[in-house]
Amino acid sequence: MNSSLRCWKTVRTMKTLGIDIGSLNVKAIVLGDEGVIGTGIGPPGDDIEAGARSVLELATRQAGLNSDSLPSVATGVGAKLVSITPQQKSITTCLARGARYMFPTVRLVIDMGAESTTVIKVNERGRLADWANHDKCASGTGLFLEQMAKLMNLPLEQMAKLSLQAKGRADISNTCAVFAESEVISHVHRDPPTPMEDIAAGIYYSVVSRIISLCKRVGIEKDIVITGGMALNEGLVNIMEQELGCEVLKPEAPQTIAALGAAIIARENAEKGIKT
Amino acid sequence: MIFTGIDIGSRAAKAIIIDDDAIIGSTIGDTGPESVKTAHMTIEAAMKGPGISLDDISYIVATGYGRVLVPFAGENISEISCHARGINWYYPSVRTILDMGGQDCKAIRSDAEGHVTNFVMNDKCAGGTGRFLEMIADVLETPLSEIGELALQTANEIPFNTICAVFAKSEALAHLRHGIARSDILAGLNDAIAVRCLTLLKKVSIEKDFTITGGIAKNKGMVAKISEKVGLEPVLAEDPQLIGALGAAIYARERYLGKESEDTGKVQYGYNDATGDYYITIDSERCDSCGECVSACPEAIFEIVTEDGHRPKAVVAESARKRLSILCPGYDSCSSSFKVNCRSACSKDAISLSW
Image 1 (cartoon, rainbow over the protein chains, first blue to last red):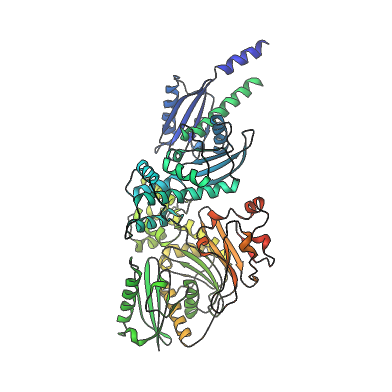
Image 2: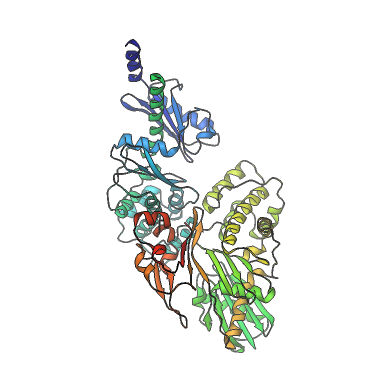
């Protein structure tokens, strides 16, 4: 009786940390009893260990904590490269858990990162059922969009805004980022030139079609949650919704969902540890 | 009698003039933005050597990416057929050809007469193409013509785990920042590309003799790597970049003299990119053009066509060829979602999918 009461108390004041070491950004989440209490985002830089530590500090400081000795779980492509925590979980599990926390009805998670896209099917119980990943080719990733925006001499946000006004979509038939570049250039130099709005929409469509083909492999089922840095791009989301034929659910900070999932798993692990 | 083959590639335009069995003129230039103009400039340049005019040429065949836009050509023939025929003129013993061009890469099998018996093509991904090497040469601030030699000077090859041109570029930049030698970076990239060429070659099966054609065959570092991976020393033509044009010239002579020839066998449609292989193979000899696959495919990928003088057969529609991985989720996924699909519908078992 006494011990179970103590256990309850401990759980109630528990804080955990989730950290996602991505290729372009490190994301850290501090999870308290009432939800997310600290968030940190920053580049890993040349020294990935130091980069991850400074992001971690950002999150803990925001949570009003000064120690980073919280129960923690790391995930993401660089998780193995840092010595912050021995606890690691795959990005797919973390994404499924994080998305489920934000939207309990989720059945499909589409995570669109800088250098990879992952789609995850979640079952009714919120567990990972199937997944497909695309990380060996730049098409269908954030890097592709970044390169195209650079080519069109537009900031990413402006390219997104432009695409929302498109009346048509320029045909970008190639999925390869390198070949698509020449297609975009030929659209610009066409006589009369293809409107910039349509080119932007065509670029988004090219990315979206690649992502949807990935979704088809695991099966498309509602509700769909989108995560990752590219989910912030309204141009992309708009075309994705058109192509999927339904609305997608977008978390407030889509880049941090994997880190959130990691923090949830850290919490579950810690609870289990106390119970046994 | 004089015949000409002209090969308008994606990056370079080539022409060869033959008089009976001798090459009397040839040229290699850049492909400009206007195909028709490029075609004229190329043939002018080739005719300058032997000092002839268009009227002296009995027949012209065009090939390559821009072959349909050569106004003075009698007909156009695919570069795959032309490469097989061209190398057969030099080395009749060649059975396997790797053609590495400016924007694509092909593996071709041919018979003793230089007819194509099987081929695969990859034109959907810049990895391993001339464009890729141009980008890398640019990143390493080394002239394109020197990167072959430079790669051979490697002391400590850096492994690359990507053939995606975009990812490889950022990886190469990161290595440069860390002070790694350009030769080591190049050797690593060549290695990754050679592995990919090998998978392409294995699809058509490798048989002696083996050759490499196209502009990249002039890159010594790349040729050495491919030879190492394949385990065969390639027999190289004097100028491998001209082989397509030479094949076209030989076809010009044959067509003029009224010889007909046809490539038969398996046709592989599709491409491979860094994420995997996406090929649909149709065995033209087995196909009885029943049309079941056309109605079975939920994405309408197939169609029945009748080419001049040939019996009708199933093909992958032109519009679908470059989007296969997007349209088709693959055999397993498709059969779990749909009752019928191309393979189950085909009573002749003529269709197969690589994914």
